[in-house]
Image 1 (cartoon, helix red, strand yellow):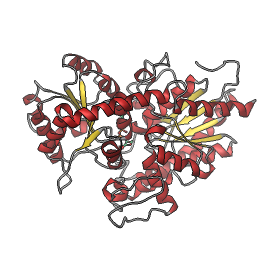
Image 2 (cartoon, helix red, strand yellow; image 1 turned 180 degrees about the horizontal axis):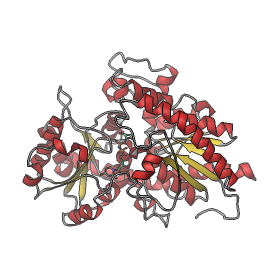
Image 3 (cartoon, rainbow, N blue to C red; image 1 turned 180 degrees about the vertical axis):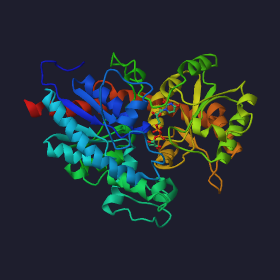
Image 4 (cartoon, helix red, strand yellow; image 1 turned 135 degrees about the vertical axis):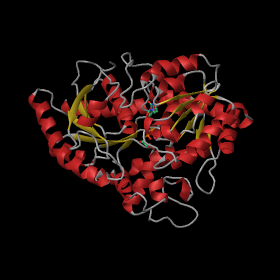
Length: 458
Ligand code: UDX
Protein backbone atom coordinates (compact mmCIF):
# COMPACT_ATOMS: atom_id res chain seq x y z
CA UNK A 1 0.00 0.00 0.00
CA UNK A 2 1.37 3.40 -0.97
CA UNK A 3 -0.41 5.78 1.41
CA UNK A 4 0.37 6.83 4.94
CA UNK A 5 -1.65 4.32 6.98
CA UNK A 6 -2.16 6.78 9.84
CA UNK A 7 -4.41 8.91 7.58
CA UNK A 8 -8.18 8.41 7.44
CA UNK A 9 -9.05 5.34 5.39
CA UNK A 10 -11.86 6.23 3.02
CA UNK A 11 -14.41 3.53 2.13
CA UNK A 12 -15.68 3.25 -1.45
CA UNK A 13 -18.63 1.13 -2.40
CA UNK A 14 -17.98 0.13 -5.99
CA UNK A 15 -21.19 -0.75 -7.80
CA UNK A 16 -20.67 -2.82 -10.95
CA UNK A 17 -23.02 -3.34 -13.89
CA UNK A 18 -23.46 -7.10 -14.32
CA UNK A 19 -21.69 -7.76 -17.65
CA UNK A 20 -18.18 -9.12 -18.18
CA UNK A 21 -17.03 -6.05 -20.15
CA UNK A 22 -18.14 -3.80 -17.27
CA UNK A 23 -16.97 -5.94 -14.35
CA UNK A 24 -13.37 -6.29 -15.54
CA UNK A 25 -12.51 -2.59 -15.64
CA UNK A 26 -14.32 -1.66 -12.42
CA UNK A 27 -12.57 -4.48 -10.53
CA UNK A 28 -9.21 -3.21 -11.75
CA UNK A 29 -10.11 0.34 -10.72
CA UNK A 30 -11.03 -1.07 -7.30
CA UNK A 31 -7.59 -2.62 -6.99
CA UNK A 32 -5.91 0.68 -7.89
CA UNK A 33 -8.02 2.46 -5.24
CA UNK A 34 -7.14 -0.15 -2.66
CA UNK A 35 -3.48 0.26 -3.53
CA UNK A 36 -3.84 3.96 -2.67
CA UNK A 37 -5.14 3.10 0.78
CA UNK A 38 -8.90 3.09 0.17
CA UNK A 39 -11.13 0.41 1.68
CA UNK A 40 -13.15 -1.03 -1.18
CA UNK A 41 -16.35 -3.05 -1.15
CA UNK A 42 -17.37 -4.33 -4.56
CA UNK A 43 -21.09 -4.84 -5.11
CA UNK A 44 -22.44 -7.10 -7.80
CA UNK A 45 -25.65 -9.00 -8.43
CA UNK A 46 -26.64 -12.36 -6.95
CA UNK A 47 -26.66 -13.96 -10.39
CA UNK A 48 -23.12 -12.79 -11.20
CA UNK A 49 -21.74 -13.82 -7.81
CA UNK A 50 -23.23 -17.30 -8.28
CA UNK A 51 -21.53 -17.60 -11.66
CA UNK A 52 -18.07 -16.30 -10.93
CA UNK A 53 -15.52 -18.80 -12.19
CA UNK A 54 -12.49 -16.90 -11.05
CA UNK A 55 -12.59 -14.18 -8.43
CA UNK A 56 -10.38 -11.53 -6.92
CA UNK A 57 -9.80 -12.44 -3.31
CA UNK A 58 -8.14 -9.13 -2.41
CA UNK A 59 -11.41 -7.19 -2.80
CA UNK A 60 -14.34 -7.54 -0.37
CA UNK A 61 -17.49 -8.60 -2.20
CA UNK A 62 -21.14 -7.90 -1.39
CA UNK A 63 -24.07 -9.14 -3.36
CA UNK A 64 -27.48 -7.61 -4.00
CA UNK A 65 -30.41 -8.90 -5.98
CA UNK A 66 -31.35 -7.18 -9.25
CA UNK A 67 -34.64 -9.10 -9.27
CA UNK A 68 -33.26 -11.71 -11.67
CA UNK A 69 -31.31 -14.11 -9.45
CA UNK A 70 -31.58 -16.91 -11.99
CA UNK A 71 -30.36 -14.65 -14.79
CA UNK A 72 -32.32 -13.18 -17.64
CA UNK A 73 -32.33 -14.45 -21.18
CA UNK A 74 -32.35 -11.91 -23.96
CA UNK A 75 -31.11 -9.17 -21.64
CA UNK A 76 -30.32 -6.84 -24.54
CA UNK A 77 -33.68 -7.31 -26.26
CA UNK A 78 -35.49 -6.78 -22.97
CA UNK A 79 -33.12 -4.21 -21.59
CA UNK A 80 -35.89 -1.81 -20.56
CA UNK A 81 -37.64 -4.48 -18.48
CA UNK A 82 -34.33 -5.50 -16.97
CA UNK A 83 -33.30 -1.97 -16.01
CA UNK A 84 -36.67 -1.03 -14.55
CA UNK A 85 -36.75 -4.07 -12.29
CA UNK A 86 -33.08 -3.62 -11.35
CA UNK A 87 -33.77 -0.02 -10.34
CA UNK A 88 -36.82 -0.97 -8.28
CA UNK A 89 -35.34 -4.01 -6.54
CA UNK A 90 -31.72 -2.88 -6.58
CA UNK A 91 -32.19 0.60 -5.13
CA UNK A 92 -33.94 -0.86 -2.08
CA UNK A 93 -31.20 -3.46 -1.68
CA UNK A 94 -28.38 -0.97 -2.19
CA UNK A 95 -29.93 1.29 0.44
CA UNK A 96 -30.14 -1.62 2.89
CA UNK A 97 -26.53 -2.55 2.18
CA UNK A 98 -25.35 1.00 2.94
CA UNK A 99 -27.28 0.90 6.22
CA UNK A 100 -25.83 -2.51 7.09
CA UNK A 101 -22.26 -1.34 6.44
CA UNK A 102 -22.86 1.74 8.55
CA UNK A 103 -24.23 -0.32 11.47
CA UNK A 104 -21.27 -2.69 11.27
CA UNK A 105 -18.84 0.21 11.77
CA UNK A 106 -17.75 0.39 8.11
CA UNK A 107 -19.64 3.47 6.87
CA UNK A 108 -19.23 4.32 3.22
CA UNK A 109 -17.79 7.65 2.03
CA UNK A 110 -18.28 7.33 -1.69
CA UNK A 111 -20.17 5.29 -4.26
CA UNK A 112 -18.22 4.59 -7.43
CA UNK A 113 -20.95 3.43 -9.80
CA UNK A 114 -21.39 2.33 -13.37
CA UNK A 115 -23.63 5.01 -14.93
CA UNK A 116 -25.57 2.27 -16.73
CA UNK A 117 -27.23 2.41 -13.29
CA UNK A 118 -27.61 6.20 -12.88
CA UNK A 119 -29.99 5.84 -9.92
CA UNK A 120 -26.99 4.84 -7.78
CA UNK A 121 -26.02 8.53 -7.88
CA UNK A 122 -29.34 9.53 -6.32
CA UNK A 123 -28.80 7.01 -3.52
CA UNK A 124 -25.30 8.38 -2.90
CA UNK A 125 -26.72 11.89 -2.65
CA UNK A 126 -29.54 10.78 -0.33
CA UNK A 127 -26.92 9.44 2.07
CA UNK A 128 -24.71 12.54 1.71
CA UNK A 129 -21.97 10.49 0.02
CA UNK A 130 -19.56 11.38 -2.74
CA UNK A 131 -20.81 10.08 -6.11
CA UNK A 132 -18.27 9.03 -8.74
CA UNK A 133 -19.47 7.74 -12.10
CA UNK A 134 -17.10 5.32 -13.80
CA UNK A 135 -17.46 5.36 -17.59
CA UNK A 136 -16.38 2.05 -19.10
CA UNK A 137 -16.20 3.08 -22.75
CA UNK A 138 -13.83 5.37 -24.64
CA UNK A 139 -14.08 9.09 -24.03
CA UNK A 140 -14.89 9.64 -27.73
CA UNK A 141 -17.84 7.28 -27.47
CA UNK A 142 -18.97 8.89 -24.20
CA UNK A 143 -18.77 12.29 -25.87
CA UNK A 144 -20.98 11.09 -28.73
CA UNK A 145 -23.68 9.83 -26.34
CA UNK A 146 -23.40 13.01 -24.28
CA UNK A 147 -24.12 15.01 -27.45
CA UNK A 148 -27.22 12.88 -28.07
CA UNK A 149 -28.39 13.66 -24.56
CA UNK A 150 -27.98 17.42 -24.99
CA UNK A 151 -29.54 17.42 -28.48
CA UNK A 152 -26.31 18.64 -30.12
CA UNK A 153 -26.37 15.37 -32.10
CA UNK A 154 -29.75 14.95 -33.75
CA UNK A 155 -30.96 11.53 -34.80
CA UNK A 156 -31.33 10.03 -37.34
CA UNK A 157 -27.98 11.12 -38.74
CA UNK A 158 -27.98 13.31 -41.82
CA UNK A 159 -25.18 14.14 -44.25
CA UNK A 160 -21.88 12.52 -45.10
CA UNK A 161 -20.00 13.79 -42.04
CA UNK A 162 -20.66 14.12 -38.32
CA UNK A 163 -19.09 17.22 -36.79
CA UNK A 164 -19.25 17.45 -33.01
CA UNK A 165 -17.41 19.47 -30.36
CA UNK A 166 -14.49 17.53 -28.88
CA UNK A 167 -14.32 15.04 -31.74
CA UNK A 168 -12.62 14.79 -35.13
CA UNK A 169 -14.90 14.66 -38.19
CA UNK A 170 -16.46 11.19 -38.33
CA UNK A 171 -18.41 9.39 -41.01
CA UNK A 172 -21.83 8.01 -40.08
CA UNK A 173 -20.57 4.41 -40.15
CA UNK A 174 -17.88 5.31 -37.59
CA UNK A 175 -20.57 6.13 -35.07
CA UNK A 176 -21.74 3.55 -32.50
CA UNK A 177 -24.19 1.14 -34.15
CA UNK A 178 -27.11 2.28 -31.99
CA UNK A 179 -26.70 5.72 -33.57
CA UNK A 180 -25.76 4.72 -37.11
CA UNK A 181 -28.57 2.14 -37.23
CA UNK A 182 -30.88 4.42 -35.32
CA UNK A 183 -34.15 2.70 -34.40
CA UNK A 184 -32.77 -0.84 -34.44
CA UNK A 185 -31.95 -0.98 -30.73
CA UNK A 186 -33.87 1.76 -28.90
CA UNK A 187 -33.33 0.15 -25.47
CA UNK A 188 -29.51 0.05 -25.58
CA UNK A 189 -29.40 3.59 -27.04
CA UNK A 190 -31.48 4.88 -24.12
CA UNK A 191 -29.16 3.06 -21.72
CA UNK A 192 -26.03 4.67 -23.18
CA UNK A 193 -27.52 8.14 -23.40
CA UNK A 194 -29.02 7.65 -19.92
CA UNK A 195 -25.49 7.49 -18.47
CA UNK A 196 -25.55 11.27 -18.69
CA UNK A 197 -29.12 11.80 -17.45
CA UNK A 198 -28.01 13.16 -14.06
CA UNK A 199 -24.28 13.61 -14.62
CA UNK A 200 -24.38 17.24 -13.49
CA UNK A 201 -24.93 15.99 -9.91
CA UNK A 202 -21.85 13.69 -9.97
CA UNK A 203 -18.86 14.79 -7.92
CA UNK A 204 -16.50 12.89 -10.20
CA UNK A 205 -16.67 11.30 -13.61
CA UNK A 206 -13.87 8.75 -13.91
CA UNK A 207 -13.19 7.59 -17.45
CA UNK A 208 -11.48 4.35 -18.41
CA UNK A 209 -9.08 5.87 -20.89
CA UNK A 210 -5.62 7.40 -21.11
CA UNK A 211 -5.40 11.17 -21.36
CA UNK A 212 -2.69 11.07 -24.04
CA UNK A 213 -4.82 8.74 -26.15
CA UNK A 214 -7.94 10.91 -26.29
CA UNK A 215 -6.74 14.34 -25.31
CA UNK A 216 -9.21 16.30 -27.45
CA UNK A 217 -12.31 14.51 -26.18
CA UNK A 218 -11.12 14.48 -22.55
CA UNK A 219 -10.29 18.20 -22.60
CA UNK A 220 -13.72 18.97 -24.02
CA UNK A 221 -15.66 16.74 -21.59
CA UNK A 222 -13.63 18.05 -18.63
CA UNK A 223 -15.03 21.54 -19.27
CA UNK A 224 -18.57 20.20 -18.91
CA UNK A 225 -18.18 17.69 -16.06
CA UNK A 226 -15.59 16.80 -13.38
CA UNK A 227 -13.93 14.18 -15.58
CA UNK A 228 -10.61 12.48 -14.84
CA UNK A 229 -8.93 9.71 -16.82
CA UNK A 230 -8.03 6.62 -14.77
CA UNK A 231 -7.17 4.04 -17.41
CA UNK A 232 -6.13 1.74 -18.70
CA UNK A 233 -7.71 -0.47 -16.06
CA UNK A 234 -5.31 -3.29 -16.85
CA UNK A 235 -4.00 -5.45 -13.99
CA UNK A 236 -0.83 -3.99 -12.58
CA UNK A 237 1.05 -7.25 -13.17
CA UNK A 238 0.78 -6.62 -16.93
CA UNK A 239 1.80 -2.95 -16.78
CA UNK A 240 3.53 -1.10 -13.96
CA UNK A 241 3.89 -4.15 -11.67
CA UNK A 242 3.49 -1.96 -8.57
CA UNK A 243 0.66 -3.87 -6.88
CA UNK A 244 2.29 -6.82 -5.17
CA UNK A 245 -0.88 -8.83 -4.49
CA UNK A 246 -2.05 -8.69 -8.10
CA UNK A 247 -1.80 -12.38 -8.83
CA UNK A 248 -5.54 -13.11 -8.95
CA UNK A 249 -6.38 -10.51 -11.55
CA UNK A 250 -9.37 -12.16 -13.18
CA UNK A 251 -13.02 -11.84 -12.19
CA UNK A 252 -14.54 -14.01 -14.81
CA UNK A 253 -18.04 -15.30 -15.38
CA UNK A 254 -16.62 -17.62 -18.09
CA UNK A 255 -14.17 -20.41 -17.31
CA UNK A 256 -10.82 -19.78 -19.02
CA UNK A 257 -8.90 -22.66 -20.54
CA UNK A 258 -5.70 -21.24 -19.07
CA UNK A 259 -3.22 -24.10 -18.92
CA UNK A 260 -4.02 -25.45 -22.37
CA UNK A 261 -3.79 -22.00 -24.00
CA UNK A 262 -0.48 -21.12 -22.38
CA UNK A 263 1.00 -24.53 -23.16
CA UNK A 264 -0.12 -24.26 -26.81
CA UNK A 265 1.38 -20.76 -27.11
CA UNK A 266 4.63 -21.86 -25.45
CA UNK A 267 5.15 -24.28 -28.33
CA UNK A 268 4.83 -21.59 -31.06
CA UNK A 269 7.57 -19.27 -32.34
CA UNK A 270 7.75 -15.62 -31.31
CA UNK A 271 5.20 -13.38 -33.06
CA UNK A 272 3.73 -16.24 -35.09
CA UNK A 273 0.20 -16.52 -33.64
CA UNK A 274 -2.96 -14.62 -34.55
CA UNK A 275 -5.23 -14.35 -31.51
CA UNK A 276 -8.94 -14.06 -32.39
CA UNK A 277 -11.75 -13.07 -30.04
CA UNK A 278 -15.06 -11.24 -30.20
CA UNK A 279 -15.50 -10.66 -26.48
CA UNK A 280 -18.29 -11.80 -24.22
CA UNK A 281 -21.39 -10.75 -26.17
CA UNK A 282 -21.00 -10.39 -29.92
CA UNK A 283 -22.81 -13.02 -32.01
CA UNK A 284 -21.39 -13.40 -35.51
CA UNK A 285 -23.55 -14.36 -38.47
CA UNK A 286 -22.88 -17.98 -39.44
CA UNK A 287 -21.67 -16.79 -42.86
CA UNK A 288 -19.23 -14.38 -41.21
CA UNK A 289 -17.91 -17.12 -38.99
CA UNK A 290 -17.31 -19.33 -41.99
CA UNK A 291 -15.55 -16.58 -43.95
CA UNK A 292 -13.30 -15.80 -41.02
CA UNK A 293 -12.51 -19.47 -40.48
CA UNK A 294 -11.29 -19.88 -44.06
CA UNK A 295 -9.56 -16.49 -43.89
CA UNK A 296 -7.54 -17.69 -40.92
CA UNK A 297 -6.60 -20.78 -42.83
CA UNK A 298 -5.66 -18.74 -45.92
CA UNK A 299 -3.43 -16.46 -43.81
CA UNK A 300 -1.28 -19.51 -43.11
CA UNK A 301 -0.53 -18.25 -39.59
CA UNK A 302 -1.01 -20.12 -36.37
CA UNK A 303 -4.22 -19.01 -34.67
CA UNK A 304 -5.79 -19.20 -31.23
CA UNK A 305 -9.52 -18.54 -31.61
CA UNK A 306 -12.00 -17.98 -28.79
CA UNK A 307 -15.39 -19.28 -29.88
CA UNK A 308 -17.86 -19.09 -27.01
CA UNK A 309 -19.96 -22.21 -26.42
CA UNK A 310 -23.10 -20.64 -27.90
CA UNK A 311 -21.19 -19.72 -31.10
CA UNK A 312 -19.55 -23.11 -31.71
CA UNK A 313 -22.29 -24.53 -33.95
CA UNK A 314 -21.49 -21.79 -36.52
CA UNK A 315 -17.99 -23.13 -37.18
CA UNK A 316 -17.66 -24.88 -40.54
CA UNK A 317 -18.01 -28.64 -40.31
CA UNK A 318 -14.70 -30.38 -39.51
CA UNK A 319 -12.89 -27.01 -39.35
CA UNK A 320 -11.31 -27.72 -35.96
CA UNK A 321 -10.06 -31.15 -37.02
CA UNK A 322 -8.87 -30.00 -40.44
CA UNK A 323 -6.88 -27.07 -39.08
CA UNK A 324 -5.56 -28.66 -35.90
CA UNK A 325 -1.93 -28.33 -37.02
CA UNK A 326 -2.27 -24.57 -37.27
CA UNK A 327 -5.10 -23.65 -34.97
CA UNK A 328 -6.44 -24.02 -31.47
CA UNK A 329 -10.10 -23.19 -30.75
CA UNK A 330 -11.18 -22.62 -27.13
CA UNK A 331 -14.38 -21.42 -25.48
CA UNK A 332 -12.69 -18.78 -23.29
CA UNK A 333 -9.05 -17.92 -22.60
CA UNK A 334 -7.04 -15.81 -20.16
CA UNK A 335 -6.95 -12.90 -22.64
CA UNK A 336 -4.39 -10.77 -20.86
CA UNK A 337 -1.96 -13.65 -20.55
CA UNK A 338 -2.49 -14.47 -24.20
CA UNK A 339 -1.89 -10.88 -25.32
CA UNK A 340 1.22 -10.69 -23.15
CA UNK A 341 2.62 -13.92 -24.61
CA UNK A 342 5.54 -13.40 -27.00
CA UNK A 343 4.12 -15.92 -29.48
CA UNK A 344 1.19 -13.58 -30.26
CA UNK A 345 1.80 -11.21 -33.18
CA UNK A 346 -1.67 -9.95 -34.03
CA UNK A 347 -5.17 -9.70 -32.54
CA UNK A 348 -8.28 -10.09 -34.70
CA UNK A 349 -10.79 -8.31 -32.50
CA UNK A 350 -14.35 -6.99 -32.35
CA UNK A 351 -12.83 -3.84 -30.77
CA UNK A 352 -14.73 -3.94 -27.48
CA UNK A 353 -13.23 -1.16 -25.39
CA UNK A 354 -11.56 -3.53 -22.90
CA UNK A 355 -10.03 -5.62 -25.67
CA UNK A 356 -8.84 -2.45 -27.40
CA UNK A 357 -7.17 -1.11 -24.24
CA UNK A 358 -5.72 -4.53 -23.45
CA UNK A 359 -4.18 -4.89 -26.93
CA UNK A 360 -2.88 -1.35 -26.77
CA UNK A 361 -1.36 -1.90 -23.33
CA UNK A 362 0.23 -5.16 -24.51
CA UNK A 363 1.56 -3.60 -27.72
CA UNK A 364 -0.27 -6.11 -29.95
CA UNK A 365 -1.40 -4.80 -33.39
CA UNK A 366 -5.04 -5.34 -34.28
CA UNK A 367 -7.17 -6.41 -37.21
CA UNK A 368 -10.45 -4.67 -36.45
CA UNK A 369 -13.70 -6.48 -37.17
CA UNK A 370 -16.25 -4.35 -35.29
CA UNK A 371 -19.67 -5.94 -34.80
CA UNK A 372 -21.93 -3.47 -33.01
CA UNK A 373 -22.31 -0.89 -30.19
CA UNK A 374 -19.13 1.22 -29.65
CA UNK A 375 -16.89 -1.07 -31.70
CA UNK A 376 -17.07 0.78 -35.02
CA UNK A 377 -15.91 3.99 -33.35
CA UNK A 378 -13.09 2.17 -31.59
CA UNK A 379 -12.07 0.58 -34.92
CA UNK A 380 -11.90 4.02 -36.56
CA UNK A 381 -9.59 5.31 -33.84
CA UNK A 382 -7.43 2.14 -33.90
CA UNK A 383 -6.78 2.42 -37.62
CA UNK A 384 -6.84 6.13 -38.46
CA UNK A 385 -5.82 7.99 -35.30
CA UNK A 386 -3.71 5.59 -33.23
CA UNK A 387 -2.46 3.73 -36.31
CA UNK A 388 -2.30 0.53 -34.35
CA UNK A 389 -4.14 -1.76 -36.69
CA UNK A 390 -6.12 -2.26 -39.87
CA UNK A 391 -9.88 -2.32 -40.19
CA UNK A 392 -10.86 -5.34 -42.28
CA UNK A 393 -13.03 -4.04 -45.14
CA UNK A 394 -16.56 -5.43 -45.29
CA UNK A 395 -18.62 -6.07 -48.43
CA UNK A 396 -22.07 -4.65 -49.20
CA UNK A 397 -23.65 -7.28 -46.91
CA UNK A 398 -21.45 -6.04 -44.08
CA UNK A 399 -19.36 -9.21 -44.08
CA UNK A 400 -15.56 -9.46 -44.04
CA UNK A 401 -14.75 -12.03 -46.70
CA UNK A 402 -11.98 -14.62 -46.28
CA UNK A 403 -9.60 -12.86 -48.72
CA UNK A 404 -9.96 -9.55 -46.89
CA UNK A 405 -9.37 -11.15 -43.49
CA UNK A 406 -6.34 -13.09 -44.72
CA UNK A 407 -4.92 -10.00 -46.45
CA UNK A 408 -5.13 -7.84 -43.30
CA UNK A 409 -3.55 -10.56 -41.18
CA UNK A 410 -0.67 -10.98 -43.64
CA UNK A 411 -0.17 -7.20 -43.85
CA UNK A 412 0.30 -7.07 -40.09
CA UNK A 413 2.27 -10.26 -39.68
CA UNK A 414 4.60 -9.84 -42.69
CA UNK A 415 3.91 -6.60 -44.59
CA UNK A 416 5.59 -3.18 -44.60
CA UNK A 417 2.52 -1.53 -43.12
CA UNK A 418 2.77 -4.09 -40.34
CA UNK A 419 6.23 -2.79 -39.44
CA UNK A 420 4.91 0.76 -38.94
CA UNK A 421 1.92 -0.52 -36.98
CA UNK A 422 4.18 -2.59 -34.72
CA UNK A 423 6.30 0.48 -33.97
CA UNK A 424 3.17 2.43 -33.04
CA UNK A 425 1.93 -0.47 -30.93
CA UNK A 426 5.20 -0.38 -29.01
CA UNK A 427 4.77 3.37 -28.45
CA UNK A 428 1.21 3.00 -27.11
CA UNK A 429 2.26 0.21 -24.81
CA UNK A 430 4.89 2.46 -23.25
CA UNK A 431 2.36 5.25 -22.91
CA UNK A 432 -0.21 2.99 -21.23
CA UNK A 433 2.34 1.88 -18.67
CA UNK A 434 3.47 5.44 -18.00
CA UNK A 435 -0.13 6.57 -17.42
CA UNK A 436 -0.63 4.23 -14.46
CA UNK A 437 2.95 4.23 -13.21
CA UNK A 438 3.98 6.55 -10.41
CA UNK A 439 3.33 10.18 -11.41
CA UNK A 440 1.57 9.22 -14.68
CA UNK A 441 -1.61 10.99 -15.79
CA UNK A 442 -4.03 8.33 -14.49
CA UNK A 443 -2.02 7.65 -11.36
CA UNK A 444 -2.11 11.35 -10.43
CA UNK A 445 -5.86 11.50 -11.05
CA UNK A 446 -6.52 8.49 -8.82
CA UNK A 447 -4.32 10.06 -6.16
CA UNK A 448 -6.23 13.35 -6.37
CA UNK A 449 -9.54 11.48 -6.06
CA UNK A 450 -8.37 9.58 -2.97
CA UNK A 451 -6.76 12.65 -1.38
CA UNK A 452 -10.04 14.59 -1.68
CA UNK A 453 -12.00 11.72 -0.12
CA UNK A 454 -9.59 11.66 2.81
CA UNK A 455 -9.59 15.48 3.12
CA UNK A 456 -13.40 15.50 3.51
CA UNK A 457 -12.94 13.70 6.82
CA UNK A 458 -9.98 15.62 8.20
C1 UDX B 1 -19.01 -5.06 -24.04
C2 UDX B 1 -19.16 -4.40 -25.41
O1 UDX B 1 -19.42 -5.34 -26.41
C3 UDX B 1 -17.97 -3.56 -25.73
O2 UDX B 1 -18.04 -3.06 -27.04
C4 UDX B 1 -17.91 -2.47 -24.71
O3 UDX B 1 -16.85 -1.60 -25.01
C5 UDX B 1 -17.80 -3.07 -23.31
O4 UDX B 1 -18.87 -3.98 -23.08
P1 UDX B 1 -17.39 -7.19 -24.62
O5 UDX B 1 -18.08 -7.38 -25.90
O6 UDX B 1 -17.37 -8.33 -23.71
O7 UDX B 1 -17.91 -5.90 -23.83
O8 UDX B 1 -15.89 -6.79 -25.04
P2 UDX B 1 -14.67 -6.19 -24.27
O9 UDX B 1 -14.93 -4.80 -23.84
O10 UDX B 1 -13.51 -6.37 -25.15
O11 UDX B 1 -14.51 -7.07 -22.95
C6 UDX B 1 -14.22 -8.44 -22.98
C7 UDX B 1 -13.40 -8.78 -21.75
O12 UDX B 1 -13.39 -10.20 -21.64
C8 UDX B 1 -11.95 -8.32 -21.85
O13 UDX B 1 -11.54 -7.79 -20.61
C9 UDX B 1 -11.18 -9.58 -22.17
O14 UDX B 1 -9.88 -9.64 -21.62
C10 UDX B 1 -12.04 -10.64 -21.55
N1 UDX B 1 -11.90 -11.92 -22.28
C11 UDX B 1 -12.39 -12.06 -23.55
C12 UDX B 1 -11.26 -12.96 -21.66
O15 UDX B 1 -10.78 -12.85 -20.53
N2 UDX B 1 -11.15 -14.15 -22.32
C13 UDX B 1 -11.64 -14.34 -23.57
O16 UDX B 1 -11.51 -15.45 -24.08
C14 UDX B 1 -12.28 -13.25 -24.20
